[in-house]
Image 1 (cartoon, rainbow, N blue to C red):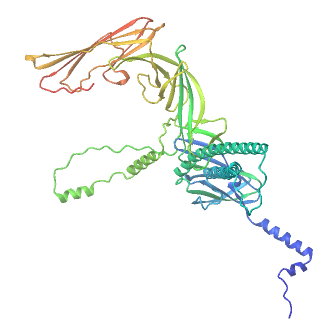
Image 2 (image 1 turned 90 degrees about the vertical axis):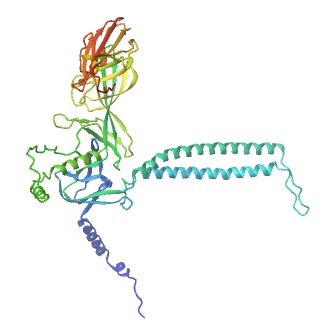
Image 3 (image 1 turned 45 degrees about the horizontal axis):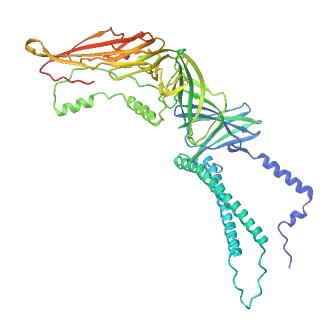
Length: 565
């Protein structure tokens, strides 16, 4: 019977030159295959432009010479496919691209950054627990040794071998010292392990809570595969929009009462939970809002016609059928705009500079984690001259407040919260908004209140209210009200005093109102509010200013007067 040769035996008989030729041909065939570059190995986030409620992310990937495709994987599911833009160096020709959305669990290498950090902490906690269990074994052994050495000697049975000699006092002392030192070290180490475990669990708890909170957002990832042809090594840039990130302006306003200036420090709070960390990126903040409608609503036609005479039901139905239908494009535009605004987070940044968004480029590279953590950035400062007022409303509160009115500095200043400081001390929180009407401030200015002025004393006399009759045989009710105020300046320098008072305003022609003031007010409709009276005048150091207002209200006796104060 002829023996069967092993299948690899012919290869052993092949000449060496033939094997080398086959190897070179195989390598040449591999080189001829299309090359693929995976973005998770070579791409990085280089630049991010943050808008209120969204962000544009720009990724840069290295393309190897001769590459025929490029895959950028593990992109966030909040990516807007319509916003994808691909740019490459002249050495790269870009063709079509495909977008795939899949579950993160099945996507290779797309574990969440939080998952890796959580596993790392869990492994550390497991190591601490294992060491604590080993210390418990050591502690049990030391206890058994101590009990065996310290117990009373038991009488040995007659049929057993004689016991070892009783240890000497020196041996007992040495053994006790060794047990004491070992036990002390064991208990100290157990205490350190307990503290370490508590610290690790404390660090793990917020990570687990954040992972559970955004689990639904991070359940899916996006990968983009681009067909290309690279003549030599080059770079490719992919930019896309993601919904959710945003920034909010904030300010720090410090008043120097001596110089009558306010130092405004501009800040920005940036946060994002898009599913990918922004590590060491070039960050730009923009006041634009690309998520809003690109076209405003148009006015509807306003027409007038004569109503036809009443007709039968059939004629009415025919008239309805012949009536022109309203413009169909208006309602859908309004609904889509409202839906987009409701879906966006609330960020009070909507200022535009001559129709274009204002951008703030941060000079240093910034890291913003995808955990929702708020990162505060400094955007510079500006010192603005201020008009200082001491404002009081004695009828409401016998207290005076220091107010600074600031004109809008050059550039765009989005509305935002402001921390207020007076002469270096924190006094409270306010709001800077040059676009909205401010209390008593001119257009384009804002008013900031820097707390009470304790060196101004305000007194309000009790209100005098007298009601009587007037007109023919007492057919009308006449009511007279008088208020008087005094304000004393106890500063060593003069102040500009502003006193506010509410006067009655008639909303019916049957009600007459007559007012007399002493002195004459500066503004009868302060802050564009009818009935709000303002006196504004300088008050010298140590001087007292007096103000009074008398109002007479007349109305028919047969009506009931409605009054709101």
